[in-house]
Length: 282
Ligand code: 2AM
Ligand code: CA
Ligand code: CA
Ligand code: CA
Image (cartoon, rainbow, N blue to C red; front, side, top):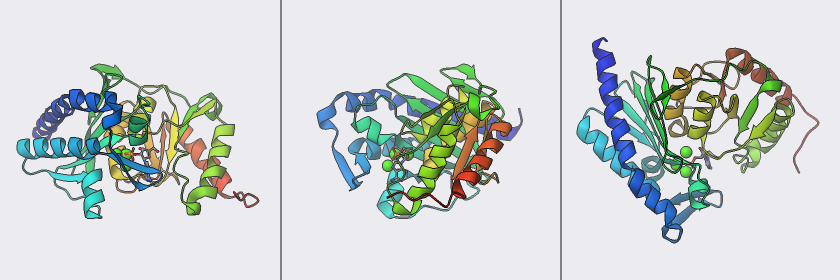
């Protein structure tokens, strides 16, 4: 191992332990439904006191261990109103609870997600579902793991053999509604089955472990995707921009897939859907 490899392993190990340590506290929050104080930024945008608490624990712990760290965290951004620029510094990209609506509605499918970027490149990812006791993790060049066991994508190349994930929940804004309804109709009609799970981070892990084969979502933020992106790639999967171009972590409008063949088919189907002019959602 070269020096940077050893550095990344050190970052990864410390973050993994820190995320794991949040388990008991967040499980208690989840099991104590009445205590889940929820706020609404909008009727479709929920947040609890646990989101902030978990983010604070992670930022504090990581800053203490690695003072050179920078942070891009969902709740800090919500407070400040602006997303920090990604620099070359080691940057932790944190979603304290991904799937907050699931958390509040007692659907056991949500996670703590942490990604690490160095020199603007994603190099480590940790995604933890404390209810299912599932710890997904990866660091660049060393494979993806679920509870310490290697995971791999299912080498699916055909859309009609694929289970597709899609975040249909992100159609509240009228501006994106028609686009999304057209795309989901086109993709779903050509796939084996379609699922909407409510956590972008866990969805990428489900592709990584071979449960889902592909995923399309737009209008997410870096923290929804950073941790899962590393896990997916280390499991053999691919990430592209919706158009088939390069994936950008700070603007994750994405296609995730088990294979480049499948991703390419999705790019084509999305283009076809976008070209449908005879459809308007009323
Ligand atoms: P969250 O639970 O951290 O808010 C599910 O719909 C996915 O989209 C989750 O990853 C969720 O993250 C994210 N999400 C939920 N509401 C959103 C919104 N209004 N804008 C962008 N992303 C959202
Ligand atoms: Ca949120
Ligand atoms: Ca999120
Ligand atoms: Ca969140």
